[in-house]
Amino acid sequence: MGMGAAWAQQSALVDLPDSIAAPGATVKWVKKVAAYCEGPAVDAQGNLYFTQQKGSDWPIWKIDPANPADTGKIWGPPGFQSNGLAFDSQGRMYAAQKGKVSRYTLDGKIDSTLATSGQGANFGQANDLTLAADGSFYFTDLAAQVFHVDAKGKLSVAGSSFKGANGIEYLEEEKAVYVFEYNKSQITRNDIAADGSLTNPRPFIQATAPDGADIDSHGNWYVGSYETGTVFVFNAKAEQIGKIAFKQTAGQMYDATAGDRGNICNCHFGGAANKTLYCTGDGGAYSIDLKIAGRKPLFAAGVRTAWIAPMAKPAVLSGIFRLDGRGIPSRSTPMFRAPITLHR
Image 1 (cartoon, helix red, strand yellow):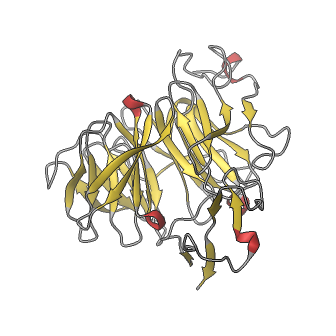
Image 2 (image 1 turned 30 degrees about the horizontal axis):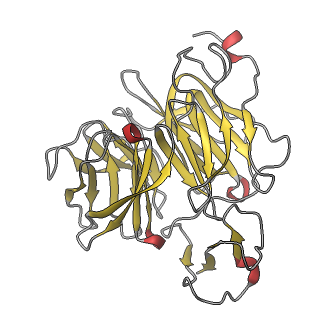
């Protein structure tokens, strides 16, 4: 596919609170790929990885967004139809693939196969995954089930009866797994039983066709909606407070496939001070600089996160934020308690 009109510079609609984005903030192209792309993830050195979809292989791309001379390259061995990606505390990449979940070393070699369909549970195209501090993880395959691999490597079905389980987020500090039910236009919060299975499902966020998401350090959710071509932003109470609308008229910048659905699917924080939101969809990978840093999971290398008890008096007032991330609240404002990061 040639460049030309499809690559003409157009602006996404950025409609975010000024506490989250500076006035006039724009979306930038990180890497142009004439295909639908997924699975953004960032390594400890700041390199962005994402997957190219719907070809014979679904390869993994790597690019250093901070280096203007880096135009990106295909990374690692064949992608085996890779979709969702994630990095653990040792810098190893986990990749959701067709009939399996693989782990890679930083030099792009397969470290091990962590889950295989038929060995404990049956699944198709592993779609997205989320990691825990003990090495266990959850993943989806766009169907009714969610799968769990425990710290010993045992694969099992963690939950079923979901309506198109797509994205998934494990927030260990909340002891909850959030499942993105694409066909239900809902993100469902689930508790976790002792064996890792999911219990007590209940609605959390209502969003059209939720695909993938990330969360900032104030508790705001950035949810990619495939059908609307939009990243919707919700506060910690699941109230929508903004959006980034990528979808333009057919043939313009954020519709490289000229289709009538899609344009954006997933997002992940990275960049300087972890304040850049990287997004993937039709046409490759994009970025927008924000004011609030992304959330660091409990297994983040070099740090551990202690969460303030709900009724505890904070030691530092600046550790408290409004649910929309707009700084210090009044006594009457509902609050989200941000993590205190302790360096080892």
